[in-house]
Amino acid sequence: MTKVVVQNGNIDSALKKFKIKVAKSGVPSELKKRKCYDKPGVRKREAKKEMIRNSRKRNRNY
Image (cartoon, rainbow, N blue to C red; front, side, top):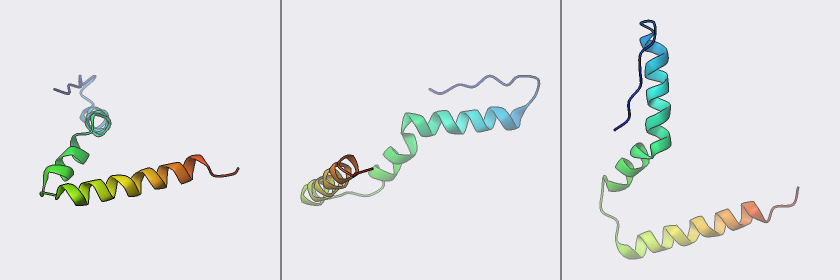
């Protein structure tokens, strides 16, 4: 469970910190993933595309 301490009654900064912590923990992406069912073949295809994309990023010439 993600917790943030409110200091000096500053709720805005605490809310901002909370949102950042939740995003880093991966909750929104996991929720998006579980929203609908993907067939195993579709998941495998998307993972393969992601691997190709990442390898191209790594092999880019600077």
